[in-house]
Image (cartoon, rainbow, N blue to C red; front, top):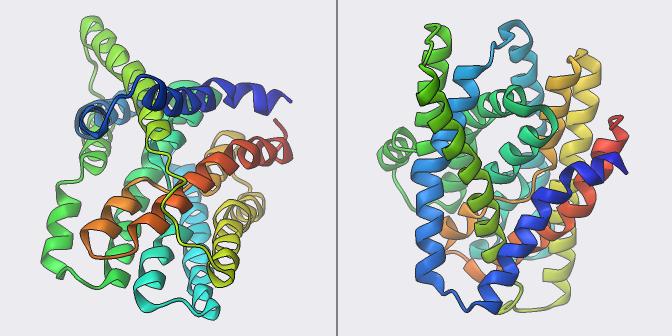
Amino acid sequence: MSAALLLLPDFSLILLGAALRRVMHLGDHFWNGVEKLVYFVLFPVLLFNGLVRTRIDWQAAGPLIAVAAGAMLTAMALGSGLRLFGLAPRQFASLHQCSFRFNSYIGLAVAGSLHGPAGVAAMAIVVGVMVPPANVTAVYVLARHGEHKVLRELARNPLIIGTVAGLIANLAGLQLPEPALKLLTRLSDAAVALGLLAVGAGLRMQNRQVGAGRTAASAYLLTVKLLAMPLVALGLARWLGLPPLYADIALIFAALPIASSAFILAQRMGGDGPEVAWQISASTLLAMLTMPLWLMVAGH
């Protein structure tokens, strides 16, 4: 039960965000503004703050990245199994990304809840390294944008910028004055709260076409994302002997629900947006059950 209690505040914020959207009738314009604030300002600050405050064990960070990459590559390969369910090419291209894309907001919040700034710093490394291949693969499968645009988008990605800036500051041994550290802490706290509220406000369970093929494909996809991917991470972490902190971070990363940005990409590139939105929402709600269970398996 300790794992469930540790995650309860974070998942409560997600449910609160869903309730606020419906009860207070806050529309898309408001929540889109919150999402932009979090994505472009607050979360990059959270990443930088975690990295600049923490001494990183670079010898152990290599195996951590290897475990995260192994889990994500496995999910990518298993995601190709969606072809067996008779989906149209547009549907397959939209849904394949849901097998491996991860919600960084939840990951950083949970890492901070379990391990404080050290957890945020470790998750920041994983996010910074895993975001580019995840985005490139998703765009490649949707097959609408050229390579140069993909590279330009990655270079402008705020999460990558925040991670790179934090790593440079960490390696340079940058010591910030106390007022600056307090400011970063305030902004980081706001990032977690507003980010999770925005995740909840974005839950969408309507406007989805139903059918036996779609239902089976959805069940397969959620199994890959929430069960198979963390199982691989858990096995690799134990095989490589990761220290407890990094083993937890690898498992949390692999057990994360689908990124909300998968919906934006599907919409922008002519994919099946409503189906992707449903998968994101279903994975987020189910992760409230599966993530505590995985942490309990890991010994929490």
